[in-house]
Length: 208
Image 1: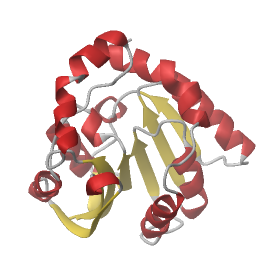
Image 2: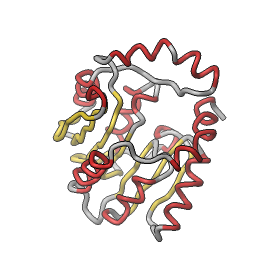
Image 3: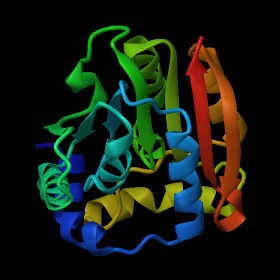
Image 4: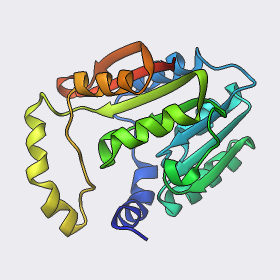
C-alpha cells in the first residue's frame, strides 16, 4: 500500500460524512455532464472517492467503472450504491493506468477533484485519451492554484504529508491545464471556474 492509499483510507469515513461545500455548483456540474450522456454509454470515473457522484450518474448510463486508490473509499461507495438500489457500478481499487481499459473502449471518462493530486497528470490525461472512443467525453474538475496565493501551499505539502494531514498537491494554472488537455487530442466544449478565487476549474472536452 502506498502513502497515498493510506492517507485516503484514513480519511474515508470523514470524507463520506462531509457536506458538499457549494451545492448549486455541484448540481450544475451534474446537469452539464449528464447532458452528454446516453443510456448506452460505458463510463469510467477515476478518483471516484466514496462513489457519491457515480451514484448520481448511474441512472443515465449503461455502466460505470468507478476506480480509486483507496479500498476504504470504495467500501463506502459499494454501500452507497446498494442503499440507492444502483446495480450498474463496478468499484475497482487502483489507478486509472492500473485499471488498464482497452484502447478506444470507453464513451466517457470522469476525473473529478483528482488531477491536481496526481504527480503524473500528463500521463493520466494521455491514458484518458487512449481509452476513449473517438468523440468520447472527458469531464474534469480540478483545483488550479497557479495564479492564486494558494500556490504557496506547495511549501507546506512535505510537512503536511509527513504529519499525515495532507495529500500531494500539484500546482498548475487553468490555462496550463486546458492546453495540456488540448495537446492530448481534445477539443474543449465547456470550461468555467468557480469557488474561492476561481481556482476550481470544470472542463468537458471531446476526444478528436
